[in-house]
Length: 219
Image (cartoon, rainbow, N blue to C red; front, side, top):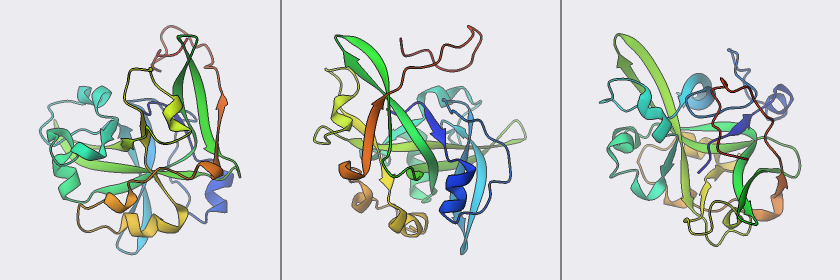
């Protein structure tokens, strides 16, 4: 799973030639936080502030977000939470600087980061939804994941007995293709990111006050 990441910086945004993000966003994102989603409207790229954790049409409130911040690519069509958005091809990306995973060292969890070696931001495949709850428009999204037991970076994370998973990264060259999909067929994008372009590093979590809304899943 991916439950925590740092979004794109202004410098990275300009380097990729993307439009400026027209709203404020936090510098570290956890489930139920707001994050910046990039999608395509007509021929133009646009930004939306969305909740990290997809809220389906049938939800009565936003509490479900704590369970829907990741979506397995294998079950997008069968899971009620994601089925409708998937069939509508509501595909976007979340541009990030780095994301974090748990690595178990001597049976204890440690937080490690994953980033590009060249310092550029990269795009995490996302699925988004727009719903109305109690007369309020709620925009939300989930990060799409894949099986990663054969990936030499991502197979080091999570509990030893757990299935190894990875977010799906959309290459810079295929961004427009991903955002322009008109049929819910994503098999060509379900590939592990190139190991030679990325690195992992030990990144202990900064201690936060007890009333912090961030997830307390790392030692």
